[in-house]
Image 1 (cartoon, rainbow, N blue to C red):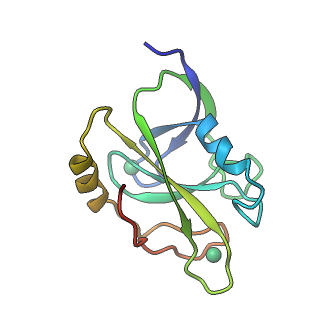
Image 2 (cartoon, rainbow, N blue to C red; image 1 turned 90 degrees about the horizontal axis):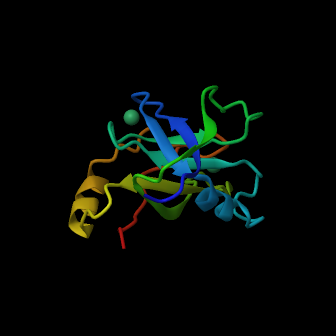
Length: 140
Ligand SMILES: [Zn+2]
Ligand SMILES: [Zn+2]
């Protein structure tokens, strides 16, 4: 078994299930100063259970930060995909939100593609609150 690593523990806004996302993977994204022009730390995460894609704010002082979301050490039990940066659809808004999803280790590309088809995008927003539509994006 691998050593426990630091994860963000988020609770799905749709069904309440806990999601564990590796902090190091997310921190690397935000190490780029241009990653989110408004300096928010918002990510899009897909729930493995209800398949809804929601926006999560990682800073504790963010108005969108949910109490109960914290960073904890845990064994890495799922394979985490760091997906594309999703662009906001609103004209003039430069926000980019990185998409994260988690797979069962060893699942095939076909299984993952089929899973992507079941995701529900209706709740996804950029940090400024604009809706982000399902992206034109192919799992590579
Ligand atoms: Zn859920
Ligand atoms: Zn926006």
